[in-house]
Length: 381
Ligand code: KG4
Ligand code: ZN
Image 1 (spheres, protein in one colour):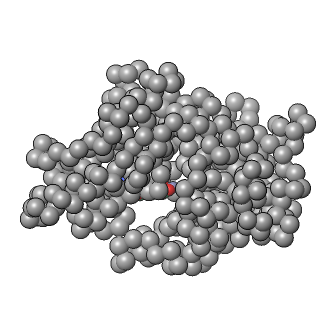
Image 2 (cartoon, helix red, strand yellow):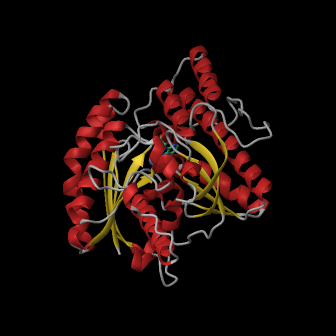
Image 3 (cartoon, helix red, strand yellow):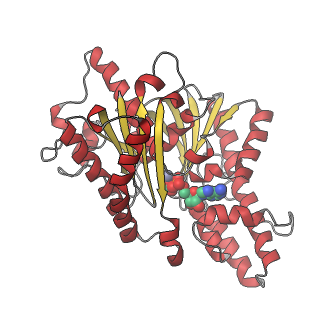
């Protein structure tokens, strides 16, 4: 069962080929099914603008997608007519960028007569640690930390996600990016800030740890960014000072993320934590979580670094897991890939398989433009 995965939600074009028979069955690790993946990053395209320009992003996805699909099929040693399904990011993301991926996926699937599976971008991130050698078993707590989201989820299985807490304003990655901008660093800010922070002296500055004692599992990062802005206005921003500020910011952000993870583990009594999304690539965060896990006695799992930020492999894997879950359902008589869930015009499966989502979706769209929507809305799908 071969699944093509397509990710185009923001500024990376990711494509991957996944063989569910090699990766999901017979006790094999999910990673074993990943036959090939390729990524084109648009960093150099957006660099001079200091952030992602949506129109440029969409146009570049259009240029890159088909060559990447061909490359991945060649490297994976398969033909497109052997595909069982095409999975693509259905949202959240930039509208034009999503449209590029959804159009290619829906057209390809329609032409081949196979399902097009719209995957929630965060579900891809959430499942990406299954692509590591040491894949976590369900249930687990997931910390999703990307440029648009910061959430703690209780994950009982595929499609069984409950939101425990989330940011009330900026996402963690957004805070890294905005702080990086204040410090004059190039886009993308998170990795640049982390590099600068390595030269910072500990203890020169200290920023607040927003909501660290709030007693719930929510986050807030916009005040932290404002605290950095206020400090920047009061100091001459020579290189050493900028590094010290970056260091202090990273410490504060990491402290809050770690404290909330520990609280979530205590609150639920689960034994495994999974960290996913771009900020999960931050090595200070990983080191601090490893220390916390050792002292509070839980396991922590990360995706391989290359699958922390956006990629096609996580979308292909999520599609494969959904497809095999659906097939299992169909054997027990609960086939969910039913005709009314198909778009009348394209024949593509619309995003998610839950009728309530279908009602909310516009009748002819295969992706959604809502900027943030809760993963738990696709529960049971
Ligand atoms: O998951 P992702 O690639 O895209 C979204 O779904 O948003 O995450 C991108 C975010 C950006 O905000 C980026 O600055 C941040 O992840 N990021 C990092 C690091 N690498 C990426 N933040 C801190 N440290 C890093 N090493
Ligand atoms: Zn992402």
